[in-house]
Amino acid sequence: MPRVAFATSSKYPQLTADDRLPIEPLAQRGITVEPAIWDDPAVPWESFDAVILRSCWDYHLKPEIFLRWIASLTEARIPLWNPAKLVRWNTNKIYLRDLDAQGFAIVPTIWPEPGDPMTLSDKLRALGWTKAVVKPRISATAHRTALVTIDNADSAQPLFDELREGPGVMVQKFVDSILTEGEWSLIFFDRRFSHAVRKTPVAGDFRVQNDFGGSELPAAPPAQVLDAAARILQFVEPTLYARVDGVVDGPQFRLMELELIEPMLFLALHPEAPARFAKAIAKKV
Image 1: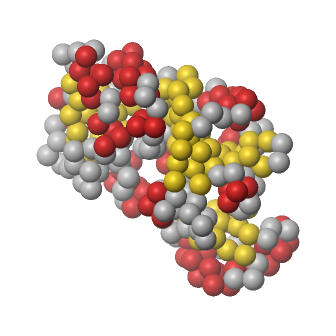
Image 2: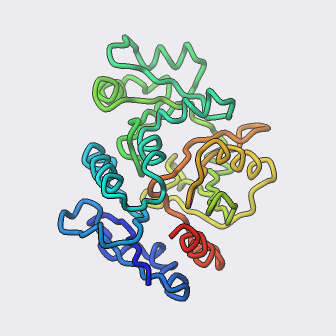
């Protein structure tokens, strides 16, 4: 009977409720799932037939350690999903530049480099952006993320400067439809569309994560949204799972993030999703 590790973080040693949902469907397929904390040195990773990244939601706080762990799995020839090459590429949000260069519509973004003399308020005026989001290039769950306007950009300048000279910074134009229509998350297993949710922020906030009061509801994506998300996935090598996050901006879908490491898959919001995920896992392992 194959043994599969669902890699998690110390905050969720027994997995999240959502990540526990595929365990029974996998057991029915003869596959045992065990939670394993990704940075616990006592875990015998070589004893597993495969490792599947799940709620490693603290990796962005220690990315060097995380990537060394990923490399150690590769060196030990332990099958990893998603593949290590994709994980390394997806860790830093600069991957969005690669997708932009391939012609995929992303939310307009600038990538200031260390040493660039830049005043945030002046740059927003030059770009004609009334609002923007400042965030680290390696981040999760809106960590160290700030919404700024031309009028209050000076207050975010210290954060901007620190990120630019340290771990790296990105500045994305704020798309107002997030406040009215929300943000789409489309979930794919083995490159096949499974389900989607629409996430909306709580009144007075811009962050859609439920950590900050945001909500998510199952929804059927418009055809152009689904088509755009599926085309993006054709650019990368095959994945076990993927979440395509984006926003409708006028006539087009703009990618915000392509989540290939540890995305929340919203399995509880679709009755068939846990079984679909289990089927995709069984195919890989």
